[in-house]
Amino acid sequence: MNNQFGDRIKALREKHSLYLRQVAAHLQMDTAQLSKIEKGVRPLKKEQIPFIAEILKADIEELQTLWLADQLYTMVQGEPMADEALKSVTKKLKKEK
Amino acid sequence: MNNQFGDRIKALREKHSLYLRQVAAHLQMDTAQLSKIEKGVRPLKKEQIPFIAEILKADIEELQTLWLADQLYTMVQGEPMADEALKSVTKKLKKEK
DNA sequence: CCTATATTTGTCAATATTTGACAAGTCAAA
DNA sequence: TTTGACTTGTCAAATATTGACAAATATAGG
Image (cartoon, protein in one colour):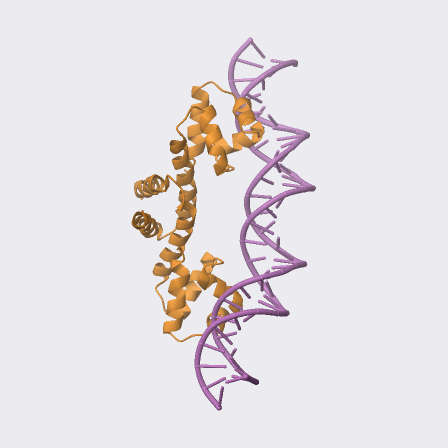
């Protein structure tokens, strides 16, 4: 499966005993939307990560990583050359730094 | 920059002394479109990779890799957690095999 | 069982994005 | 200065995404 981000924010929300309603309000969306985000049915907007990190008292970078990883995984899954491509991108990033 | 795929198919096309017109016809698109694809302005459809590989006598897997790498790079560029996310996806792929 | 509240799922119009097609432009060689 | 190759710009049509709401389901307390 492939919803690390959603699973994580759901776990954090429950850990803090918050209702969808409360978190959703903080993000200015309705509970239905947030529910779908937790389930991985819909994506959260990148710009909203800091807000959700704030209310869940989570590390922004952790959530950014999970969020990106989900996107990348969706893109490479089932691709025969996934490994090669990932390696190539990693290498290219290193060079640029 | 970020157009390995386009650069490669352009180089191959020139190596074989083919006109845009000829390659485009084989892909059932017009030359303007293919020109943009070579320049990286527009993406080639994934399903078309085998066709372009055929006419350019290229290795399908090579082109698939470049194509995917371009997509991935576009997705991670400028992201602070790009490295972490790439590593995590690579790891996840390994586990699944 | 009934009721209340939380969550999930379905739907759909509005909005945004991508695509395909064509016109018009530049450029280089003859 | 004409011709052919390539590039760029534009725009309507096709697709995809989003936001909002209604309805269904799940869960807990009386």
